[in-house]
Image 1 (cartoon, rainbow, N blue to C red):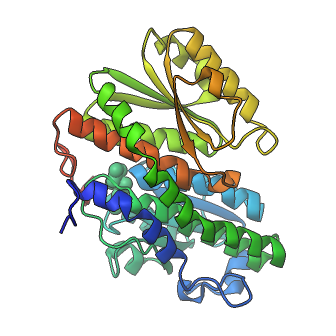
Image 2 (image 1 turned 180 degrees about the vertical axis):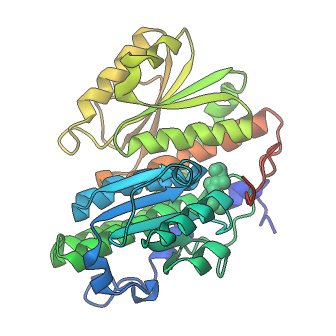
Length: 369
Ligand code: F6R
């Protein structure tokens, strides 16, 4: 069933172009606009929304962090993202006009389920983004948008994560469409950008051999740090989570702007630092800032591994290793830049002799607190 791959995780990483394409399938009308009637929330209900709150755990939470950037940009609605385990024990302010989005691959995660129950008791409308048909979370929600990643067997989430981001983009864009903050041609253009993603992920997958080699070379490192800004920040967190759970290494992701507020003290000779660079100069105001972050850590002896778009030449002088990803609109970039970090973690775990598909102490579906 592994189709010739050594691990389910590798198979599932390779399935990502298809998973992304399937999640977009049937959700764009002939007019190039979105039609998400399946979601079961009326346009009137969506027009009443005055705040979006995303709740999720682990990798799904990282998808929610990416969603925040897109939803606020496209809809001008405030969007909060919170770990379900924190949300449910706080006294969060949600009401009838709040749209709560619960993201869960399995649809059974206890904390996410309890968070959505609480939100519904407060009168909020809850939309589930889920990969498992008929699971508890979609059953208990007002609305559901399924990710069509197909069954995910490896404990570490890969294709589900990419499709969760896609589903969040669809919801954000649809809210913009219904509420009139995004107009026809703008929507059509983002939809085209989304449709280009499967081919871009394919390109990334075809160029992963050097990343595998790098992982094997770094297999004896004791710690790996990840830096990102804007949507690259959740990607950094996700890269670190994958490495922890699979390779049992100390790995931490930081917002690059926080470096000087503490984490830079961790930088020492030869520590590998993976930096997720936003779109090149001209398309992202943050590009210069992250280039200087790379310089800063390198000047302190770090071994820099830079994930940057094709054609971004500014990073070349400061990258000990360069991982190229195809050019992509800023907000959608996590869909391509996450992939090398998944491959890196998988190869690292395998080089260290660990069971990639069944990491110790972890379960695929977390139905207890
Ligand atoms: C990490 C991972 C977990 C899950 C988390 C939520 O690779 O898979 O962090 O993302 O347990 O699970 P779901 O999405 O099923 O609610």
